[in-house]
Length: 104
Image (tube, rainbow, N blue to C red; front, side, top):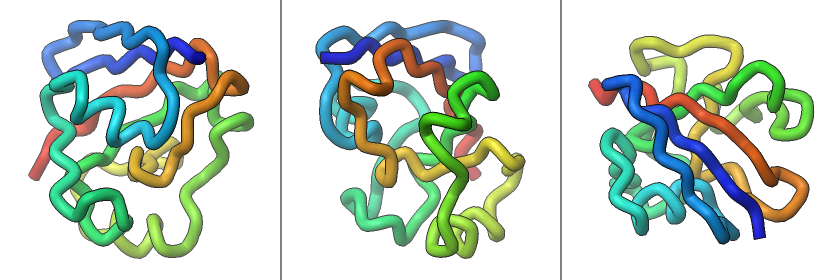
């Protein structure tokens, strides 16, 4: 299982151990502030917007077209922006660090 760190808007780091599955589900199950997942993980909202730390972008990859279309209407996006419902965590992403984007 992987370890994942969420950095929330207040600058606090939240390390989740034994993380596996959808990054959004991991965040919601662990009460990470700023991740709501209103659409249930189908990529139709941006309430799970995160910015992947640069050193992880190659492994995680950039947003695909569906994500880009949703993120286009969101504030605070950048080239590292992803919908965390579209990121599946496994041992290959052990140590992943993401910044939780401000909702809104």
